[in-house]
Length: 334
Image 1: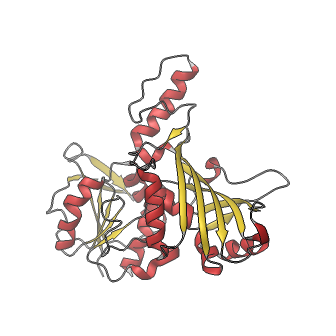
Image 2 (image 1 turned 90 degrees about the vertical axis):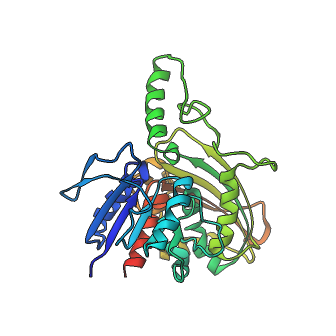
Image 3 (image 1 turned 45 degrees about the vertical axis):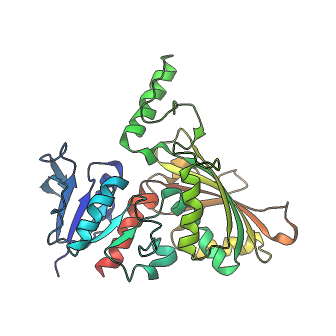
């Protein structure tokens, strides 16, 4: 059976990660089409030993295409994803354009692959911080309902794309040489600095990234009763997000049970070496498909073992974006 796959936004950081993961996982496509803006159209790319010409993304790009992986921004997705769906192509979209629409599945395969079908030709990939944070929370929630979740994120610059990653590298060099820093990808210098996530601040004082975390978790878990609050921060790390997560459960939740549940859960690797003070770190998470989980300990401010603290690290470009989308595409390809 032939399976034709298009990648929209192939020249971006997530687009390039799509290619790496598709090759690693031996995705069963028989034909690929690489799409980008008019600036990149006509350029050549080599993928799995074959030369491809990048084509300009248009509404007609998806004729005779089965699956399209989108990572080209919300405005591009809103314009071209419905056009692809009308032509019989199923889009897995990495932007926020469709995530909260009632008739669009919002999918993390380890949690809710059963919602992939039915779909109307568009499936949404959740936000990176949502994916990395709630994959390890889900098996705990299934065993013992989470009543409250407090999340503090330490987010890598890769979430803002190639330009941000290159800016961090150049700013580190400039800062060490005593040069003045001139940020472009962010409002503030990212080298040797920590600042509030660069998304818009709402009237309630929360930025968009924090709001996404709340609404997306409710939709993916299919449970609006969980009280969730977050603080999302940029840190001078290239491509792996970390999150400190405090959970309050309906029933007592001893540490030993948490460890046992996480050991059995897919997509998770426990890194919790108290003796050597070794826990999840961005450097270890980079390039990993699994989310690293550690600092597993009782929240002693809550009585009767109802609270747990964990610390997680996950590669923002992989499980936080491209890998999750490819996993969804693998379900579509079956």
